[in-house]
Image (cartoon, rainbow, N blue to C red; front, top):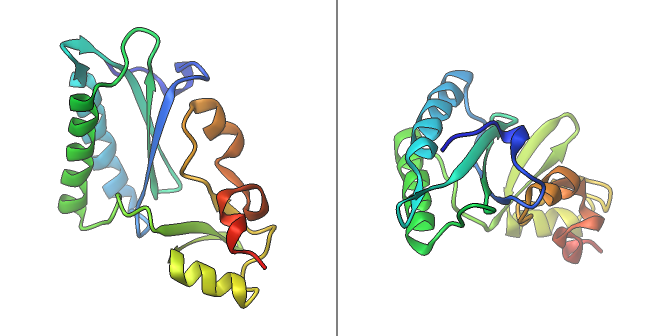
Length: 161
């Protein structure tokens, strides 16, 4: 069951998929339609899941699930990953590679491999105050409060000198 993202409670489960490139407005529109269609029929053991999504910065697909009434099962999580894989193929993007880092570089959003980010940190091209996207957040509350944070307040801090 598709609901408005703003109506999800703070403890809702969150999954963030970052694209390796910025999506065009047309791509975002198609992805929004496809994601809405998927969430309308997303179930766990026959129970409708109360889910929502948003697409941030033309780069991040954020899925949210209110687990109060029904939680995602292994099969329903597999279905969502399969859906994301279909988007990857259709739009020739990478959404599942967790070995990449996305961060603000001035007003722009940069996307680098973890190895390149480590090199940039060593060269001091990124600093403890560089705002990174912490895609490891698990709940809507964490997403709203700790998703865009200075690197020193995130798991990224281990790479800073």
